[in-house]
Length: 393
Image 1 (tube, rainbow, N blue to C red):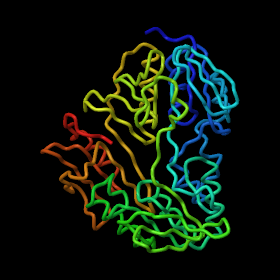
Image 2: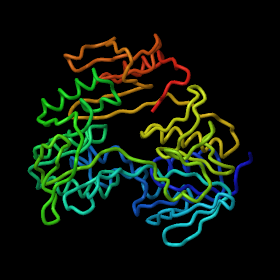
Image 3: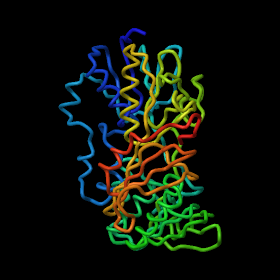
Image 4: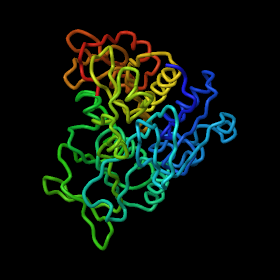
């Protein structure tokens, strides 16, 4: 494949910007356009649930690059105009405003959007946290709140609960798992995380789902659980996962199944690639389709896409990695942590809140978790050996 004369990147967050930057860094001199649904210049999302929500960072600090640096890249940014359709044959994207943008190659990097609970849009005081505007609005309301209920016990819900606890309100986390992030960490380590939250004043109502949001006069007043218990709240955050932002591709002809389905080169069709949270690609070492929602993957996959746009024919086979910061704890995960894995602490001690654990399946190390021991966890990453056809979701 020869380098296309023009590239249109749909999505202006980390994966989209990194694709464009990588192309320029590798010598690409063709026309580059980045289309973004939000009005903001590209910014980083991980700080939203931590530094921005806590008030430690001003919103402007999340911007990924200074405006002067973006200008030097000679990229046309089209912002505040979401993609509404794609003609794969013509490689033309139609926007919500009716604009049509064409290029020889298109990169889909539209990320994910939060899942919603029934009726949440009809009640004031109910929030999601995905965008910079979401984080600002939630912080403003939490500063005057007395009771917060976080609906969701995954990474985002746990981070929001931890950050909000430092802002003053009583915080209750609800969700179907037995402990926060049990699906990502397994029951043993998730149990340690539950202890951390309780010690810091977060109330846990886990192991049951949410039946409905409760309100009066258009304002949220609480959450009713599946077991009948009603939790009072003047603010509710819904963090029940996200789904790939692919609705605009419904009539495109691309295969969409829990993301944009791609080959091992992150190619969805001739001249069309995908990167970041929205991409579900064939991982050659695992032999399965994989979709990863994390910041590290967004950057690494964007670099692979840039290489392939320039004719490199590079398969993308990463070792997954993510991290989360909660209270004064940093948890880093390399590889995959299956719920049924054998878990062994190999360095440090959980009682000291500093340790590294190895996750094994069928005798092979498939994942490494570091709890306040980042260097040691990174060094043990070399112990990971893939199990053929094991799931990596």
